[in-house]
Length: 110
Image 1 (cartoon, rainbow, N blue to C red):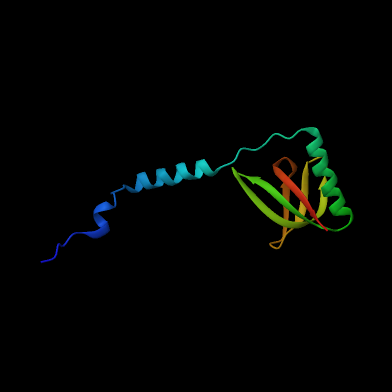
Image 2 (cartoon, rainbow, N blue to C red):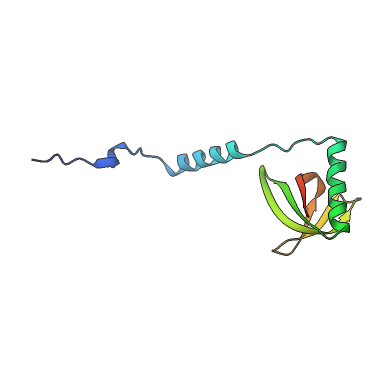
């Protein structure tokens, strides 16, 4: 005589679709980072690195703040607009404009 039970099914809870969506949203909110506030020295350092990469036609690894998450791209700098505070870069996907105040980190690839 064998006992016929439901196996793992009896241990799985019942969740409403709204509850699952709310849990996913809470998990995403936990993963988000806050945009740091940079001092003038750090901003000047970023600017110098970007100008150096543009002048010598070098690639740059950029970390960009994107709606609470960090986005990393490797690109080459084509233009720097100090009035608009925008840099224009070329990535594998094409040309892109990046707001200077969204940059988290800059690394020049020699």
